[in-house]
Length: 246
Image (cartoon, rainbow, N blue to C red):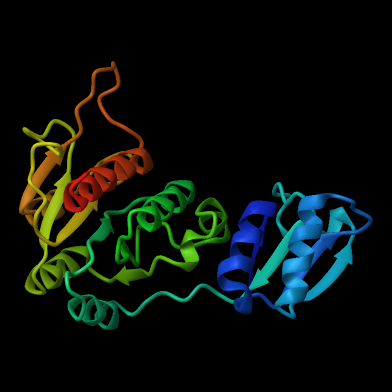
């Protein structure tokens, strides 16, 4: 089944970066909106079929989401094969850092995590094939185009995936509430796999036991943990800061 991405900014990002994957654009009829005209021009430039229709049809197509008058049809999301992806990482010098999500459930969180992964040049995101959110239309839309740039691969068994990443030369850094070591105190001068836990339970014990390091984020407020997408952004930003010498 095809998937639909809607909203001016997400659609524009797709047309700018992955326009060839889009085969149909729905645009609200009789609109003088400059942003929609810009999206239409991008589609014509890439020879993508444009169909003008009523806003109600776009709403039905997008399950009444906030489409802003435009929706793009894309093929089903294609996950990267784990072993092919890992071989590709091993062929690079230095190996790109990696993000593993342990049973993350919220599609908005996954979409936001992909944006951070793209921003900080992460080599890919590993999610569980079961008991984890998959890449849905909501994820793609929330990622604002990052889902078409950051490889996402599915692990049948997260622990086994971590073991294979270790064998490839990675060090596993898990994030947990109350860890004795702050992310700012750990010297990240090695190929890193950052493991982020689920929204409610954090890292599962078995996953936690497979980490080489456990780090936390300092908190000065009354809430003892951050939203996973916010925490991921902070971790990846600190990793980039250290490795870029800023």
